[in-house]
Length: 173
Ligand SMILES: Nc1c(NC[C@H](O)[C@H](O)[C@H](O)CO)[nH]c(=O)[nH]c1=O
Ligand SMILES: CC(=O)[C@@H](O)COP(=O)(O)O
Image (tube, rainbow, N blue to C red; front, side, top):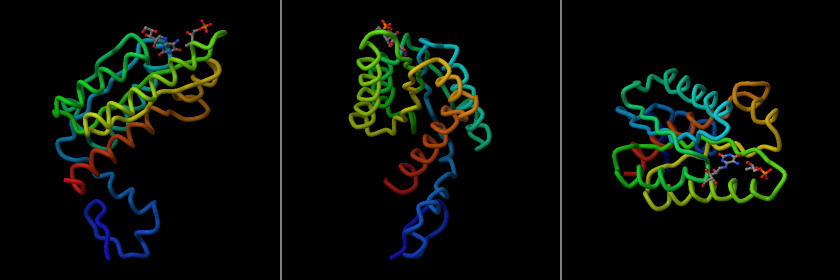
């Protein structure tokens, strides 16, 4: 049996190779995406956003098909993502935030709420909601993942958003 990925059918042997499914990286056209970005630790989240926008540009997603909304912190991302998802106007919702450990257990509450909020938003709306929220021990770790030594996790999350939008658009309808 062949599996459909992007524009080509894969034979059963190639179907077993997950890298073949990168062919799903043909953005749906138009590829409407909403970015929900937390303002908290903006010094980090603005770089994650830049990375994500660069990736969309690289994959020829039109600027006018992307909207950005800023929310106070990562805790607020889920409720906004779910509302946007339920509007059915977007093929993916890319959630960006940076939770950085402090002295108390507050970090765990915010990080876990952000993760479960984004997960619920996707499950309840049926629209892929992508988790581009860093959960780091310190600012160095965060900056390294926002365009520093460890790459740009915003750019990686954007790739996931394109792949999931394409999967839903082309294969799961
Ligand atoms: N400490 C961090 C927060 N805290 C703020 C919360 O997200 C929220 O806005 C507040 O509790 C009001 O509901 N947010 C982050 O994104 N990152 C943090 O490190
Ligand atoms: C999410 C956090 O870690 C932070 O803003 C809270 O810091 P603290 O635990 O020192 O109050």
